[in-house]
Image (cartoon, rainbow, N blue to C red; front, side, top):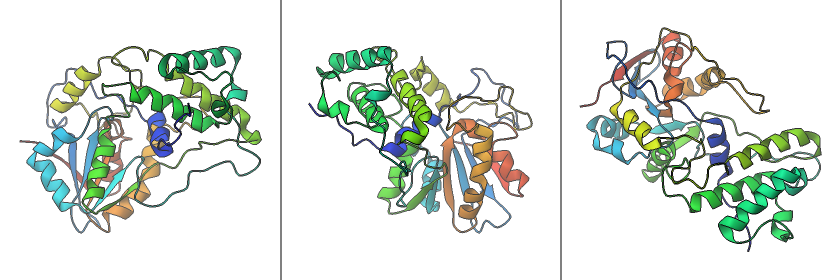
Length: 310
C-alpha cells in the first residue's frame, strides 16, 4: 500500500494557522453590532465598491448563494482575495540546502507507536517496515495523516467542507482570478531546521487525537453543527471600538498573531480594491476589534459599512 501524498500543501498550511471564534452566543443587537457577515467598502481610491465577507471555515458556502445580497456581490466583483488560495502560480518554499528530512527519523518512540497504530487501524498497514513510509518527508507524512482522516470523515471537518475554498472555486469557475493574503509557510525542512521540523510533525500527530469520534475536525472543536447554525444567524458583537481581550500567543516557529496578519494584509487588499471591485473572504475573527480588517481599512480612509441581509 502506497500512502497518498497529493493533498494540497497550501490548504494544509492555511488550516494549521486559521481557527477563530464565531462570536458570543448571546449578543444584544445595536447599531454598532449589525447582524451581518458582509461589509461594503467604498471611498478613497475605490472606483467601484468592494466587499468584505467574514467566513467560518468549517461551513460550506452553498447556503450563502440563496441571498440576493450575495448574488449581487458575486455578480459585481471581478477578483477574490482569500487567506490561502490563489490562481497565480506559487512555489511552496522547500528547504534550500541539503536533503529534505524524512519524517520517521524525527519521531519519538511514543510518536512512532501512535502513528503506526493509527495507520494500522485506518488502512490496515502501519509504518513498521513500510518502505513508502520510510521515504516520506515531514510534509508528506502530515499529508498522509490528513488525507486518511478526511477519507473516513463525513461531518464538517475543515477539509471536506471549507467555505473559503468553495467561494474561491466559484470565482475560478466564473473565469475570474484571485490571490492569497497569507504567505506560503514552510512545509519542508533540512538539517538546518530540525527543531522546526519536529514541531511541524508533532502538530500533525495532534490531528489524530479524538479522530475516532463522529464529529472529528482538524480544529478539535466540539459542537460544530451548533456553532455553524449560530454563525448563519449572523448575530455578532464585532467590538470595533475595543482591543482584543485575549491576544493569541504560541511558541510555534511559524506562528503569526491575528493582529499582525491583519496588518500584513493591508497593502495587498488596498492594491486590489483600488484597481477593481473585489470580494475579500477571510475568517470572521479577522473582522473583530480595532485591530480587525474593518477598522484598519477605516483608519486608512475607506468607508466600510454593514450590508444587511433580507
